Each structure stands twice: as C-alpha cells, then as structure tokens.
Image 1: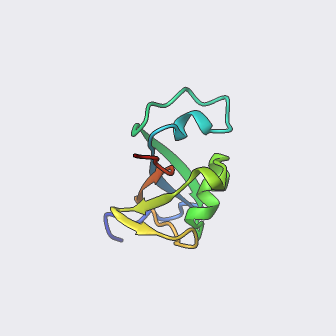
Image 2: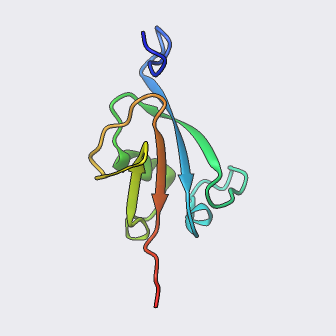
Length: 97
C-alpha cells in the first residue's frame, strides 16, 4: 500500500482536499459548514470512484458558476475520477476588462 492509498478496510470512501476560489465558498449549499475563505482547504469524504462532477454536486455548487477544476495542479473535466489524497481546486468564471 502506497502513501496515497487509503487504509486497509477503508470502507469505500476516499478523502480529498478541496479549495474553492473567488466567490465560490459563499455558494456552498450546506449551511451547517462554517464559512470558508477563498482558497481555504476543506477535507471531504467522497465515495470510491466519485468524479469531479459528483464532488461538485455533493458541494451543491451550481454548474454555471464553475469554470475550471484542477486536480493535483492539472485542469480536468467533470468525468475525472478522484483518488484518495487528491487536491482539488475549483474556480468560477472570471471577468476582466
């Protein structure tokens, strides 16, 4: 078992670290969580085999408010599978001018 593997008998859950940027922390649908600051790390359990899209749904983030998602520093699509220990960064569309 490698350092990135969940413990034996883990029960089908993996832990990922999520960082939401810009206004996304205020968009979390779970009012029971303490408020997050942009870029603050949040550790979450997700089912084994969960994808980035499933994580976004678990967080209750509106799809139209997510522009790009990174896993371990690489841009990925919503169908990207998550693994124990992944670090996920979620960014909204950013306007400029």
